[in-house]
Length: 193
Image (cartoon, rainbow, N blue to C red; front, side):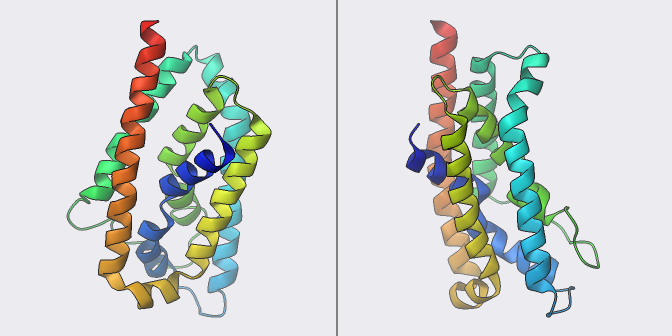
């Protein structure tokens, strides 16, 4: 996988546009003077979690004796389910955020460093010829683009409105369905060899 394809995949999986309404809602209870500081803190925590999983996740999976094609098939299934939720969100949304200032949950984990991002990193790191430095750079680029969007979340929410954000999330979900099917087929092809 190339740098650009890995970065685009990770960006889509992080789903910053789909997270804008959730970030706006979670930060609405935070004093306006602290919102940017809290958001930057949460984004940095998410990046640290993602990098830790990129470099140590394969070791943990190796200790469990899980094969690479199993990761590819499972990652494809998980990504498929997540993309279906992007295309067809459950009624009622993601639920109410807790009162007060968010810390780690829900902004850093699971909204930015969620199961789909972690599974995608594990899958990318497990591909033949994967280079950790390249993946870390792609992750950094995807995280930076996501962070810029999320830092501008109040402006985006006002400019695009709820319908515009939903349209972008559905488009990302459609692209992720295709990527999920490809991951599943790649894992199946390796298994059948």
